Amino acid sequence: MKAYIVGVGMTKFEKPETRDWQYWDMAKEAGTAALTDASLAYEQVQQVAVGYCFQASTAGQRAVYELGLTGVPVYNVNNNCATGSTALMMARQFVEGGGSDCVLALGFEKMARGALGGKSADGGAADFRTSPVARHYGIMAAAHGFEMSPPTAQIFGNAAREHMERYGTTEAQLAAVGAKNHRHSVNNPYAQFQDPYTVEEILAAKTVHRPLTKLQCSPTSDGSAAAVVVSERFVESHGLGDRAVEIVAQAMTTDTGDSFASGTCIDAVGQPMSRAAAQQVYEASGLSAADLDVIELHDCFSINELLTYEALGLCGEGESGKLVESGATTYGGRWVVNPSGGLISKGHPLGATGIAQAAELTWQLRGEAQGRQVKDARVGLAHNIGLGGAAVVTLLRR
Image 1 (cartoon, rainbow, N blue to C red):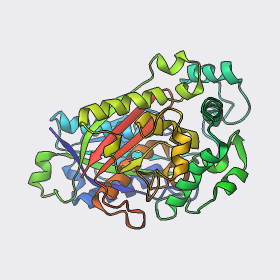
Image 2 (cartoon, rainbow, N blue to C red):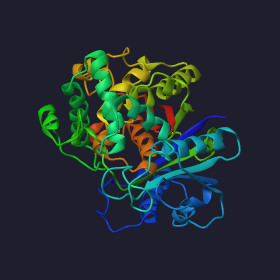
Image 3 (cartoon, helix red, strand yellow):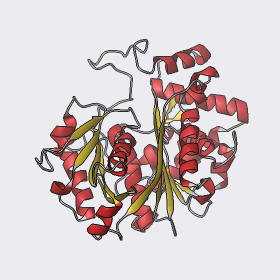
């Protein structure tokens, strides 16, 4: 049974503490927007998958109670930075499996200011020996040591150094990713940042962990996103054909031996997972990178956008720096990657990110993205990854 997205919604992604709201307020705003977009009522929803990372158990129920008290099953999902896409995948599986005709995928996050992952739950220094990503950081420490900078910036920054040493990738090419995504976000009213920056300005920004500067790193963010996923028969019976975007294929992978065998940060941050998920999606859909028009990918740091180009097959191994420099991944190029501004500029509320990617692609494929519209977009791909690890790739078609 086919599954379709017929309604999407999201809040503006904002710096934590910008608005005086609770996570259930933002979830209500995004969920209501998605249902309104689909011209449906919450009473028509049969199951709900809710993604978040930093709230307490059953926060999903507390959030959706703001939409209605219908007693339907609510599933709480936590899969690190891939949480939102994991909730979307569950919604698709519920529909494709025939168990439900209308499912809501909802993601939200209310975050604390400051770098991600530097503190434990009680506010003290995090102990990475007991962390779920201890093996990943162990790979980094063995190869590069462990410094005082934010740990996620360290592991991705060290992956960038490895890529530079192995392939000749330059700091300017890394900065070009940030420049492109900040430029794209100017036309996205949902983006946390909407200011353009030049490559030179990005290189001159404060260093977080060499070679990554602040303007190449995704910020902590508050926000929510939602998507209504329905069956083909639901689309037909409710006259939603003009709103429907098909989820053609979707795959999730986790770490394999390839993530750790090389001892490199490039593999530890998930490039093998991403490559495997993309291959599964291409095989299931019969499509390839050549068929894509628009891509929303997980640029938590500029280096991860380059690593993902290679994993998705947009270019050969080690060629991603030259690819972004060529203009192939922006308007007028071969693909438009992160027209929303990506995580670097749109923001990164962990539980909402993957669903926000699907929302952006849905608007793009419907021709509703206004000032950031990709011309004649018909096929879109979303890539969402979390350390620890999970990589989710979703292929959408209009």
